[in-house]
Image (cartoon, rainbow, N blue to C red; front, side):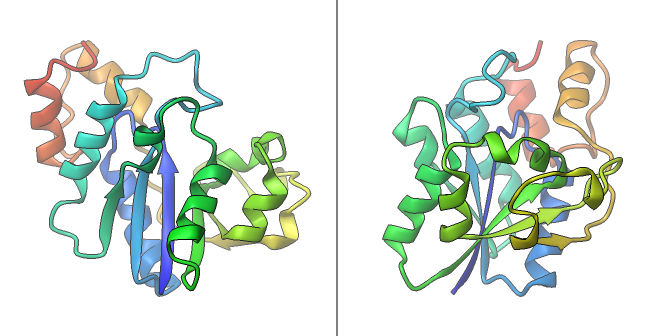
Length: 192
């Protein structure tokens, strides 16, 4: 089985996440994409992030209706700082015969060499870097450059940061997030 692992903070998950995941799934013929929300993201510990259980619930809402998408609570259940290597090793242990693909935004490649056990990440899963507006392949300087597959995805200029700001200032987030996620944010008074 070809399994894509799409990790992130998802604070909140938005339609851009879903669009690029679906595009990569089709482009490299993945059997499924598993969204993994971090408990505490190592590179974003200083940001205002809603509780992990809310981000996990919003992800569940977001992927409803797509039989190829799943949500894993592996990092939230584990707690503490979420390191990609730990998650991928656990996925490998659960399904040793699966071919794992780690989906990452190209913007995150700038810091990839600082990630915990980057060598192990590359050994456990194939890295699929999704294009992002404003980031070009020649701009990332990771020593693993030759081991990374570049996947052109539609340029969707939606950001979680912008969505949080729009909620905070009372602006609409309709169509930026799935309707079920918008309802969840409203019902739980998030990002106010």
